[in-house]
Length: 260
Ligand SMILES: Nc1ncnc2c1ncn2[C@@H]1O[C@H](COP(=O)(O)OP(=O)(O)OP(=O)(O)O)[C@@H](O)[C@H]1O
Ligand SMILES: [Mg+2]
Image (cartoon, rainbow, N blue to C red):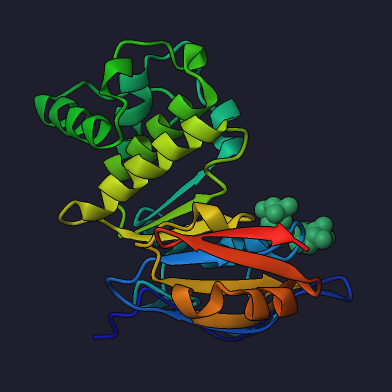
């Protein structure tokens, strides 16, 4: 049984005559958490669409959670993948309480149409506690701040028990302190038993927590470098990656980039 989480082999994705992903080869193994770093338009979201089976490779092969695309039911696969992005926020019912937003994640519905069971309530409570948002249990979703909403949405994604959890720029729009709190909750999540494999997508190196031991550097659709985060987060590698001189400072295993 193939137990790799994600395996892309020589994947190209074209639309019209434009190649948005170019010969990407990438393997994510069990127990690894990955950061995916790239500038605007580098192809990060396109890569996530591919992993979720919303787009199909023009060439190369895609295997996710041991299933090769073309051989499995994608709807079934998607139930094992959680995907949190800020665009999801607008799709949910703002007047639902946070607990309903979380519990309905089990059924992947907007709004809850199933009867509440004790089991669901207990699980939602535990997940909201892990994410540090249990105090929002009875709050209308629309009244939550941006950072609070992101925590609720991560708890929602976990409700379905995914094996893979993708966080697409979860700290967008957060102030310095909300961002740190959200990152702390994400760190807490990774310490849980049964934590899913995490893929953390970002523009900012300082958001990459030490638990994200591997990083993929994506530029103009190409996987420029990949490997141990600590080996990539230095001035030489990132200046080459950004094609501009930058200075990287390491504080407590977090990496801060300055344009020089
Ligand atoms: N369906 C499409 N048709 C044509 N071009 C597309 C399509 N989807 C994305 N693109 C283009 O492909 C490039 C990569 O887009 P993508 O959304 O993957 O970037 P990204 O790395 O997620 O950027 P950001 O950090 O801004 O979210 C962009 O130039 C975008 O305009
Ligand atoms: Mg994107």
